[in-house]
Structure formats: structure tokens, C-alpha cells
Image (cartoon, rainbow, N blue to C red; front, side):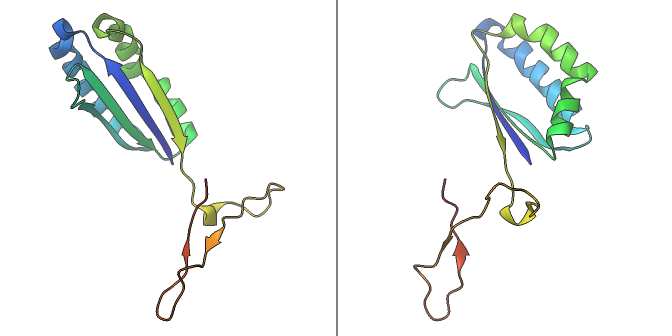
Length: 128
């Protein structure tokens, strides 16, 4: 799964227009194949900062998202409402049990067994 987080600083004078733009983008994007979620949120510390949270089944689904007509329209109008630079981060989330064993790379996940006692089950502890 791919997760994308973004911060959009919005000009106060164009806030309503920005909210409508983001709403249209959210609705259209959620209809795309591979989109799990796509939402904008208003920042609590600054109501003129909109936060984007999106989840995709795969990198390919996210890449296809960039080639849509609604993305083209969004990118055309977005500079008019921005009050600074957009910041985004992309994360890939993988289940260690789903990784193929054919790789030469060691992808083992350490297991924390320190709290095993009678009646408790071992839990994987992912070390970053």
C-alpha cells in the first residue's frame, strides 16, 4: 500500500475556492481504480493549511492517478489558491509476510520475545 501525505498552504482570500477544488479532487480520485482513500483536512493550528491523506493499492495506481483529467485540472487551478510551497511525503507500507523469498536482500523482521510468559503469544516488533 502507498500512503501520501501533503500540506497545502492556502491564501485566505481564496480559501472557499480552494475547499471546493479539494472537494472535487477528492470525489474524483476516490472513484479511481486502486484508490483506498483520498481526503483533505483543515489544519487545526492553521485553518489556511489543508492536509491531504491518500492511500493507494500500489505505486502503479498512484502513477495512473497523476495521468487523469481531474489531476490536470487540479494542477492548473492550484497555483491560484496556494500561499507557498506544497510539501508531500510518500510512504510504502508492506507486510513482512508478503515479501517474496526469492530476493537476495535480507528482509527478515526481528521478533521481540522478551515479554513471553505463560499464556502470552509472541508478537513481532518491527525495528526501524
